[in-house]
Length: 145
Image 1 (tube, rainbow, N blue to C red):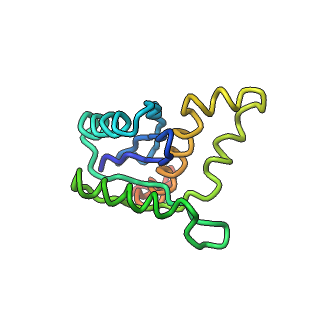
Image 2: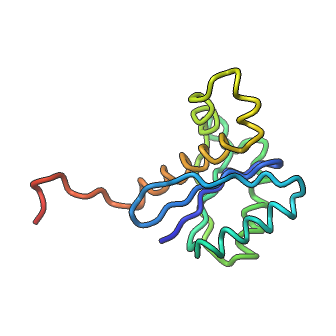
């Protein structure tokens, strides 16, 4: 299992990587100006990392209904499935950007936001949530068979 975590945005795409070890690691965000350049860069990451699963943050509202960006994310998920023929797992992304941004000082947020660091941190939280549900924890020390 080689998973690519994705925090989709119309201007930036945050990325993270994780495998059977169960730890999500941030990757550089895709911040190219043109959407097709971002798409080409995404395709390159998928090929280079030999990704087997795509984990996409899904914009639910706090009440559990689909958020206003849900249609955009649905279209992005459909394109991912069509072009890469990989499973696309949708994961609730509520508060991930807020949590990712909360570790950055207010004076730096605008600059950091433009760099895509927050987006990739959010993708890491999304992917880690997915991995935590899929990868079993090792037994505590002394409980090995």
